[in-house]
Length: 284
Image (cartoon, rainbow, N blue to C red; front, side, top):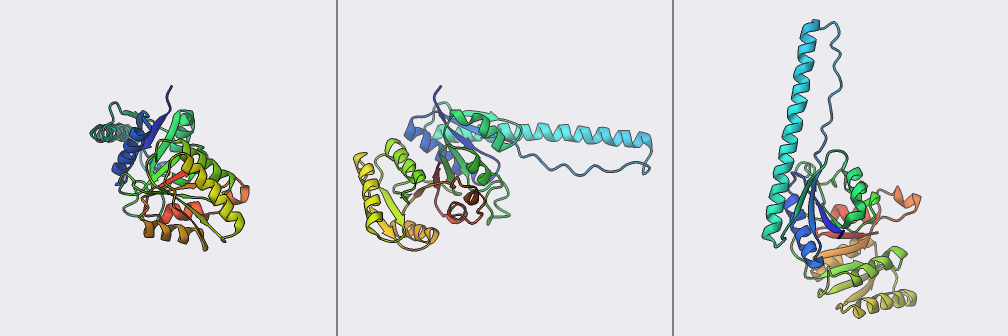
């Protein structure tokens, strides 16, 4: 079974960009495309204590009405999901996807994705979910949990997606970064595009040698590879380089595996996710 590009959609303003990014990636990789919708589970109100406040018959009638209301909400959520998936598939077809799939699942998003992980070649998510318009400074409630839980490439898109013309790989010489380098070199996703290679840190002989090895790897895969080693804080340096060179998409390793780094809310990954004005491809 061929691994697919899986795009998670909801009712947020980010969903059209998720559709566009997923369709672009699926066409570049010649991979099947599927859209996944997991209805958001509403928080149930705390149970009311009806004892003694109204008569027995009235309590039973009220409980029946509440049960009927829950059933109606479920049907409406399911129908809404079908409409979202239908719209996503229509958008994908207009981009050139022949047979996009639509899947609706109930349960937790992270758990659903974990169950499907083996079949995923690339996961596409919006930077924020349905609360984005009212809480735009926050990441999507599930985003960090998904990134930490899955060991698949994850493309996190901003509110608009345009096919990238220039990409950048944030490279630090770590095992994660080297694996990301191998994936970029081998994948058809960015073939034919300039791939800027940027290291953040002191311009030492060791750093130059590491950067040269990485650049050679990409050049052997026929990439045009502008490269630089720049001092400063990673988030600021990478953002400034992106703006100065018109980078459309940034590639970087996701969270580290150590127990301490796993708990760091202010990690570079989280900061870039929160503040980046362009899509990020996170590689594990």
